[in-house]
Length: 239
Image (cartoon, rainbow, N blue to C red):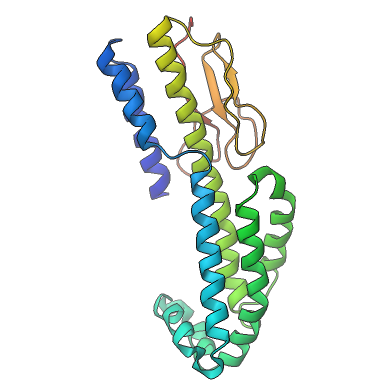
């Protein structure tokens, strides 16, 4: 939620710059923001590295046998009081945790491979794996049912960030073109990272948006806290 609020605040700031009187200074400031905003693929590249790093740590811990307690303990430090039972399992039930960690290695490698591919290409398999993890008992499968399951949801968060970045960057480029030429371009080449298709772009109606992580077309209705909507960039009407 905090990340979403920050992205919405950034959007408001960018629009304030855009809505200022057309000038070379406004155009330069928009160009400066292009250098700051991540590319649409950046969130997934970061996740891929994180997943591979997690798999490497887990593999190293498993190779130490009983000594892998050094790897399990940091997890217990982050648990809340209501997780006291799971905390006990990770301590007294370390063999169970290690067995499940071995099975989780394959899940992390799949996640890393999935993060390296376009989001829309792996959506069906990701949903299937997420449902499978959701059916696992946190007592019998403490690693997969808790940590791997939460990391699968990280992919959706990355997709949401990616969608916003794609829409914002495309919108800034459109507004820079309008400052330079007096009108929006007839077409844009920006791709929606959620669908693999072009971003929705209709300058005559003032529309430019990504469908957002839920992949539902809400007609460009901008995200509000707690609701899955589109990531939109409002264009000035009248071209």
